[in-house]
Image (cartoon, rainbow, N blue to C red):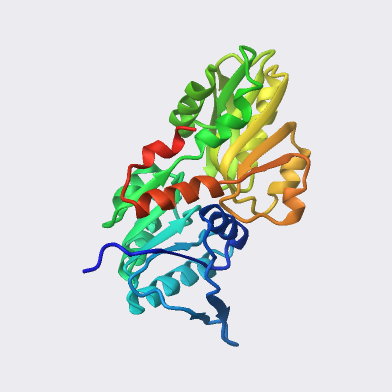
Length: 317
């Protein structure tokens, strides 16, 4: 079994071509002009125009909306590379979808995160490179190596220079306390928690605020913003409890359904989002949205994986 390629080849599906091109640019390599299209009936068609035999192939594809199409593109790209005798295939998923069902919260629930992990392995991926999984234990769902990058250093760098003793890092729910505490340690700030209950998926009711936010500048930290109900209702609760202003940041800007409408109507001053998911120009140009690129970090990670070196060093600067 071949476990390492002799040179790097960068491929990408259609989910986030701008990020893939930026990563390839940081590496000083061309992005493969693989043809990723569809037959007339909607089936995905893949053609690799040049050889990948013996190469270390990195396939960049976020499984974001349209989730199923992007996942199938990734699987077929992996299969194509495997059958073309690639030396090693790394699935690079800046955003790993189907991650929110990571346990049996209720009887008869599926565990889709494990299912997708199994499918990627069966398709032929030799390893996975991803960022801020919805739950860290998803790494253990894979039977192949997983390199897990963190968005917190990039987001913390964005706000650290403006934060002082009048700032508080806020967890939007109890489940995100560990993430907020880690972030707060990077910017040397106290934390507060929005205590809420969720009667059903994508519906949130704020209960109260744990911690002192009166007269403070608040920065809410989460791994993803989907419909923005949690972050916007949390921001309103903070303002109702005396906060001076509210900022927010997250790794993955899913921003589905009424998300942008809610954000525009909310008291949130600014949301910093990493570009793990490709966002339309209307979102990128929104004055409340600040987009931060992860291209340099992923390029460093790819170089490190290819060299079989330690990933921890890539955060040093």
